[in-house]
Length: 541
Image 1 (cartoon, rainbow, N blue to C red):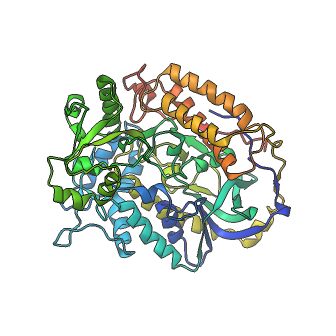
Image 2: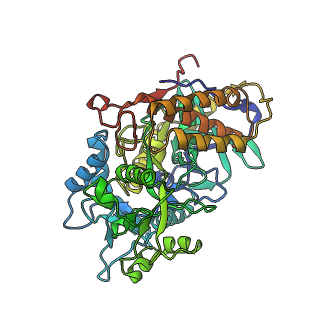
Image 3: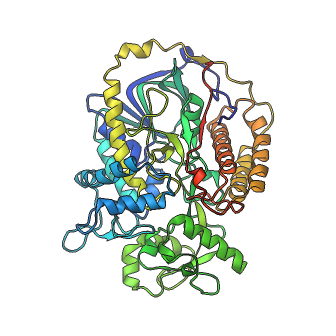
């Protein structure tokens, strides 16, 4: 499948722009990107950029539940593999699943050596939790419910100590630069300084997901699908874009930001009840609250409709208050801001967009279809998650692919002499005409989020998806027809491109599988045990 869009979102002539040169360019400062930077040989220069002002701002940093791996002597790789394949709706790559899971203990040991402080029992062994879809307690966590924060803290401290790694915030990736089909860096804008060219022997995209396409989401504000859109324009293959995972339990308080209530809460024994206090999950699945996320999300939506309500509730009132306070200090503090004491009060929750299983198609090491370009973490489609990510597997994937991409990109960069970068300098784009229509970008973005939530949310059908595509096509005609020469404009254009892919892929997949639910096709269809891809035609460029 293809989508009509310009090759570059802005006009430029590299002869008139400032230039920066690096061996490895990493876009994104979450766990995957920083781990990749650390895996590059110290002899090579690494430039890490993020569009955020705060380099710690990412989906990784927000991850509460933990990181899953076989760390208990009673657990087995085969069990973790089986749980992952079962959650993935028969679309996982079994070889990728085996590779990531068997590497897991080694990568976590490396993080401990880097100074990561996981929660421990009194005897010094890891305190392992359990989450939905896991048959064993295998989720390591830190500071109760701040695992992502602790992992990012550790890798960021290591990266800042390396003289070959330069980390730069407030830099917006506009597009990837390509020459003769190969990625040679990027064109970006530094806040307050304008556009610049960053030439790189190898480029690694670690830009995160696309949850901000939806009105209800747990994602960081920067998760707008930029990396997916820029990779598509450069010729990369995007795969399985219909598979957005909706987290079942997002704090829903009028006027409050949407905060994730980690799955570990249910792993520790919390119940889901409706407005009448009825515990409904056993009616939908024998695993009750520990069913995979797609099942719990659909069940919550069904119960909300059945009870004519806006939310359901999590309750831990039957649990030890001291245990709750020690295990979930972050959630305790967030809910307290709204007068909710989680040790005794019910927590109002509903699903929200959480994790993109689809993304840039990569090989076993992280390479994309564009030579010189790699993708890792949530921006990528590695084959690990299939149609539905197993809880806490994403941080593990970030570590495994961060190492492989960093090592692989370093090896490839070593083969390219510095003089090669100078040969590709005369790249320019005439771009499109300037956008003349007065556009209220924030209004369009808010309308887009509402459209995606309403027409491509937890439950979908053909009529909703066709209506959504018609609206997106109308917006696309005037938002992509001319240049929107600001980060806010480029971000909106990226969001529309990625939204179109999600909506189109969801319409074509006429079945229910994993995170993709079609009410008009409620069953899984063996004929649809296949992937869907998008690739822009770059043959004439």
